Amino acid sequence: MEGYEFSASFLRWLVYGALGLTVIGTTTLLVLLAKDWKRGTLW
Amino acid sequence: VDATGAILSGQTAWMLVAVFSVLWVALGYFWGRKTKSLDGHMLADRNVGLALGTATAVATWITSNTTMLAPQFALQMGIWGMLAYCTAATGLFLFAPMARRIRTLMPNGFTSGEFFRLRFGKEAWLLFLAISLFYAFTWLVSMAIAGGVLLQALSGIPYRAGMSVILLVCTLYTLFGGLKAVIGTDLIQSLIILIGIVAVAIATLGQADLGQVHTLLAQKRPALLDAFFPAALMAIFNNLLFGLGEVFHSNVWWSRAFAMRPGVGERAYKLAGVLWLPVPIVAGFIALAAPALDINIPQVNMVAPLVAAKLLGAGGAIMVFIVVFSSLASSIDSLLASTSDLITQDVVGGLIRPGASEELLKRASSWVTIGLSFAAWLVCLGENRDLATVLFRAGPLVGSAIWPVIHGLYRNTTNPTGVTSAMVAGSVAGLWAYYTLGWYTASLIGTVVSMLIVLSTSKLAPRPFDWALLDPQRAD
Image (cartoon, rainbow over all chains, first blue to last red; front, side, top):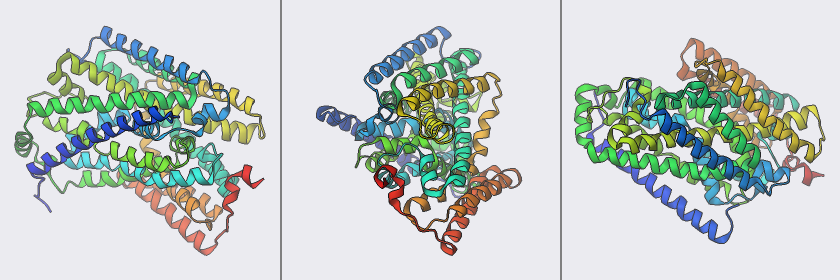
């Protein structure tokens, strides 16, 4: 394993993947919020 | 950025602190004004829905460590450092099915301490309370210290003033609104944090090409790209087990399991795990981009704000300040609320005044919140910054509670004496490892020793348990 390094494409995949997941997750949270709000089931 | 490294003027910072403090306290008052019962104050009437349930789990798990320490991890341990940090999401994923089981077995439960008392008896309960309260108080103190230190570093607000204000604000809205205030503000805080880090990440990507970042790292700091980075690989195990121990035992997470309406807990915790998982990478990678952006980093723990301020100017500095303030508040309020619950229910209602009325417990709860916050404030006044590292020594202690919780929740043969012995032996062995072998082995050894004792004693001397006893109201 020694000397083996993460490639630029892995770094790209990792960062854009994480960013994409955060955006999707945040959007999902907002959609769920709107649904709970509409149904009166927030708490 | 001024000579001290502050990215924001004291005046602007105080204004932001004032605006958000008034907002949190007013919302706390608004949400708590109709709450009359103990269930309502401590557990938001046990009726929290999916959106708020998810948001509160995410916001609480995103501490100021996640937004500030993840970039530092990236700067010191590279790609593996970020990945190591992400493993803390495992705690949320694995707790998801447990949250459902907890809600089903204890529909009227209040605290994780109550589970230990009903499931394993007095000895294990007292030991658990000692471990859990020590851990919660240490976490609270370390967050308040982080608050003072960070506000000072970002804006020059004196340490004692920043630390006092953030503790006072969180205490006020927790006091007024109970868990509803904590969960409601958590939603707003989680959205601020998520949108803030995404904005900074997009701005960074707009100015630094990742290919160029990779080339520069390979030239200047090749170790950060190393796929075999021993220190970082060890950090993974420690972070993973620390996260599991923290989530499994802590009343912060159990109280949310009790507070969510039936059928919500499992989905909320899973979703929270998915949302939290990428945060250390999104917040962390900007540290790797610093060399490509030609940003000088005088202090490693200030890398995130410095990059944001450089890329986004005054707006970026304000955004980072609000994100840090939100991530501090979302953790401090949760710790205050759930630790107060643990002290009120288990210490006051369980030890000092068994059989106390609901009215008395509700009043006690307010005094406990004030007392807890005051005690934390007194400790933080000492400015002993090393106290924050005490939290890492608590790793093996909470690690030793992982198996008692898992086995006790899913197997009806767990031996209570075995559980007590497992927590004692696991804690002692883990602390020994911390001082002799190295910090990164402590949680691992504490957890494994405890696991072996729980499994072997339950196999050799099983003690059958009736699950109905976990819900005394039904058992009556």
